Image (tube, rainbow over all chains, first blue to last red; front, side, top):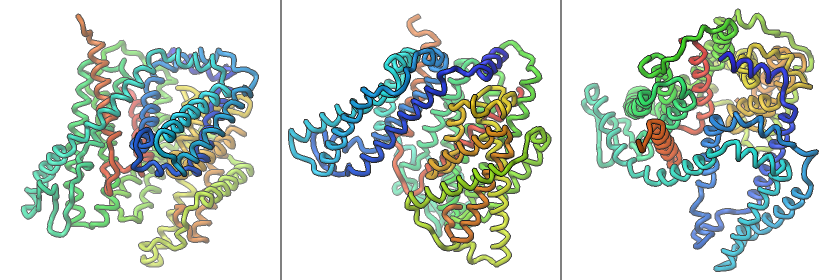
Length: 561
Length: 59
């Protein structure tokens, strides 16, 4: 721990000279390819290949795999990067980046792109037949390879790419092998769905039968329920999704922290996690039947059904972590190191920065699971966040909560961007107040709206800024995040990778509005860096949310909430 | 010994990851999914944050 702290602190004091340039080049490359894909996708109709033979048919059959394979490879790459790549970042950074973009490669990229776009649009919108179709598809794929490689070499020299691949040594072989094995195995994995669904039905039946003798269970039709509410357990609901997630989670957790465990004993966590998640799925289905039959079919299907799976996954995953830490039989025996005062201070601070935000998320999942479309229990989120903020209030006294006028301006800019993106995305404004809220008494309606605004303007900005800017942004700079003064993140020494990554994480949390969410994250972080005060980011965030609340209430665009 | 403990552990980890990814990859859209993609970001953020808090506590 000590050596890591020293290394991290050195990084804070002397940031590598080429790191920000590398990030800018990588960001530019990603942005260019992203925009090009968007533009070409908007002009080409992929379904033209439906029912075709040869290469065209093969491309059509790939269908969802075109998304799944890159996502899988990205996840596995991250896993291996954690183990192999980080040690070699310095080697990559030591390579000369060159004065700027290589215009010759960019020219080749533009030419390849133009040919690829022309071929794609013509192939997909007016596909020829027979051998000509296959030849053109091959040419199109060759152009695609040229497009990607020429863009890559235009933004970063060949030497940098070579070092990146060398640095991760055999990790790329593992990534490709694991991705290929997973894709092949996924075809065979579907064979266990039916038996798994039957066992789930059997177990849920066994759980409910003692309490509900009139339970209706039909193993042939895979249905289970009571007279007024019957569920069909589809093969896709057999519990395999949870099993898959827990397998990935436990394997990754054991591997990342492999020095902490005693192997092979720690491997027991894998079957234990699988058994726990599968049993919990049977409990979820039993609970679904009870809620649907005895409480409300709407809550069962629109609230509980979509939230319970994630709640149980989190419970099992966190349970595995706790078991792994508590059971000494699993943990590797090592020398006891007396933690330094700095480390002890950090232990308490992590909870102080994260708990208000985690309270909002946890309570949101729980209240969502007992809601039927409209979240009447939103005020509980406000209460949970306020309780966590009050509990850790002593830690926050050391932070600078002052804010100036630029924070209001930044909040206004984010608000304008948010509304602009909403218009551009073509989202259909609801224009009417949600039916359950309209049907409530005037007092209940006003009380709910008041608490909703209070949450949006007070507790959410504080909790999110503490988590994303106060913790994550600084934690990405140094493991001892509290030692990173906000002022050290000032304009000239700004570390772009932490800024970009923490903003992307913030954006992703806003679902389909991830792009504007990421931009908002960047703006709030820049506002914070300007004066080194977290109060600036909180005020900017609160201003945006207050303006959005006013916009929702005045225009009736409730989808923004 | 042909297979060392380290190799066996790597094979076990590889197999576990393969099976897990295979299960996730084979997911098909159903009307009421067991794991709803719409709430994935919140759930994973909660899990990551909770792990950070748990790991920051002294044993």
